[in-house]
Image (spheres, rainbow, N blue to C red):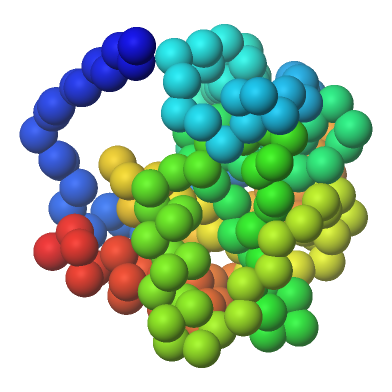
Length: 175
């Protein structure tokens, strides 16, 4: 049978400043293994995310994690979206990563409003070429990515219209 573990805590989300100011993100060196049997699942083995999170330190609110074939997968505790040529893109999680509740909520709402969403295998080069980037989870909501540090190189973005639309969707459930 299946064992379910439920954890409840008070939601302390209050119009996070980070959703307004954006976050500074590190490209983690720890990579995720590819495993189709557990890909997408929320399971209790989060060791890879813990190891990647250990790289962050005080200067970074979140980290970007790649798989062992150098495809961008997710954040250490969040899902990832980016915008290229007015299209919303999120990594395919068929081989690694967690299909988060907020990710599904955003995909559903963007699709409802006629925004095309692409999923696939993307590299850091694809991410760095994006017009805007944001990360999401059901605890902190939406964090616009304004800086990514990769091997000491810093890349910057503004908070764009698609990210602002995601934040508006967040306000529909977090207010």
